[in-house]
Image 1 (cartoon, rainbow over the protein chains, first blue to last red):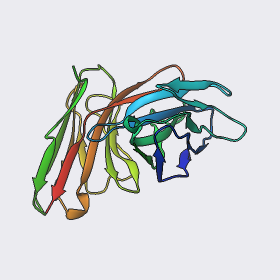
Image 2: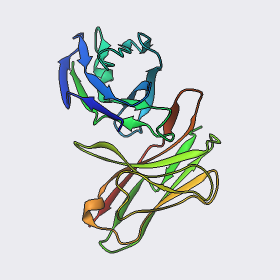
Image 3: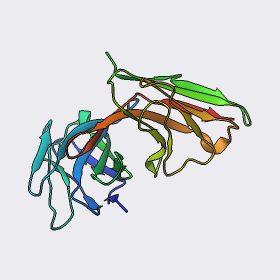
Image 4: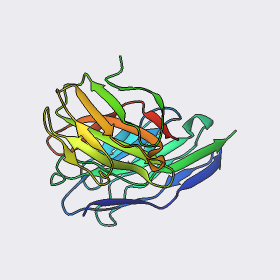
Length: 113
Length: 114
């Protein structure tokens, strides 16, 4: 079945550090990939998505490139800020998945000033 | 104005009691979802619905029922609450576009079962 794996459970950085959160997926079809962000006390919200191989999604300085060859969609940001502290979820939606979205376990990002 | 709202935002219940969590959406989406969020488990799907009158089991439905009386409303019901159901519950609404489904989440309900 469809699934998403996030390698890091928690990432701790200082402001202006480079961020990478790894995401790998498994899907029977050609899925759309998402990154969601959840700030404290709120529900998850869409950060961006990508639907085609080599397509780059981006928002608020974050970006990820759809790589069908390595089944990956790693999240990167060149210089993190304290306000980026949140939980980040990688997710996928597949045409054969009955309108479901499959989420990874999430990565808690803590950015220290 | 928030498109997906949940009530209550916080709830304390006793073991064996009945709990109803409510969700309302103004997105006019066909699909609605209930998840629970626990540390180390991310978001786990409990029940979902394709429209008024329909409910489907998700990945962890045991101990939960769902009700979709209208396009706008979707409830999660714990008939006999247990401490293991202490969690944060999120409702979402969504539709399927040409290539993908997308979901929009409410603010969550924090449930504590004593």
